[in-house]
Image (cartoon, rainbow, N blue to C red; front, side, top):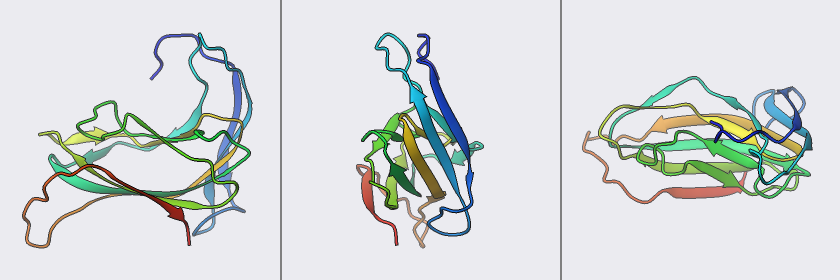
Length: 162
């Protein structure tokens, strides 16, 4: 997913944090230790990519996850799903820093393509400091009567996680 430019040098540590979770017993933790920021180089980042998920053509989905940040830049947390904006309307969606509190993100988006599309969710950090991710899910929305749900603009909701 690089643009072909050389990368900025960075140091990240990624792993499971068994002491920090919004639910369950652990979360994904990314610590950004050091990042160069040369403008002529690709921005450094680190994250964890999910196995492929297949989305039904012309169907809406709910994407949810919780995240928490500590000492990061304001655009450190990012979600990448695919380069095809018909499948997922954001090439890379950034989320604000949380000042060490858990936030719950809910996105309602439509796969507007006419084919079953593949996405590979990638949660990542572009900053020094610490980012935690927990409870990622993606679910198709279906009407009880089986009728299609007309597409709309994406819905984005970010609120404190309970």
